[in-house]
Length: 185
Image 1 (tube, rainbow, N blue to C red):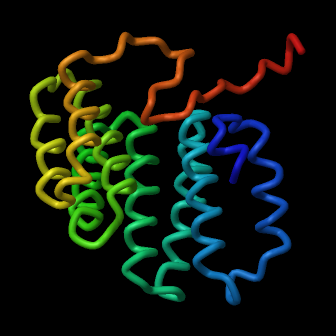
Image 2 (image 1 turned 180 degrees about the vertical axis):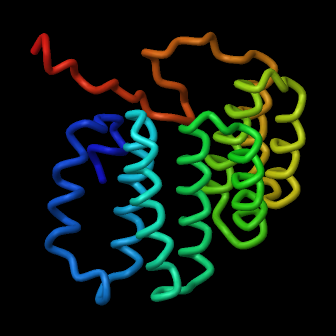
């Protein structure tokens, strides 16, 4: 999971699959579902939609085995990231908005701010430069006064959108390194 979060997706696949091979999903369905969702996201980024779809289906089959509001939020967030990686910004934004609203109502400030940041990035990618101000305002309303500095940072993202740099990391997303070309390595 650390390799995935660091953006080294190619190196994350083997340990994730090894962990799933040693894990009995019946005893740890939440963990198994999370690992499957991470793999679905990686397969999506790598352009393998059939493999991503299979991982997502297996993950969803595990959801009823470990129902909880916290897991539903985490799963929804993961699914939103998968959809965003597939380039379906409208669908991803709707999923993220649902997660963000849950986090505003029942989550932590840091999680709500991060989810808002991811939603703003999708809005910026969709050339919707004014929509993010509402997300920033929502943080202030949900988490007064602690939400104000976070909201200011989010508003700054909207005022001054980051330059498109596929190799660089954005504050809301880790850098994702493309898979190595094995023909030249």
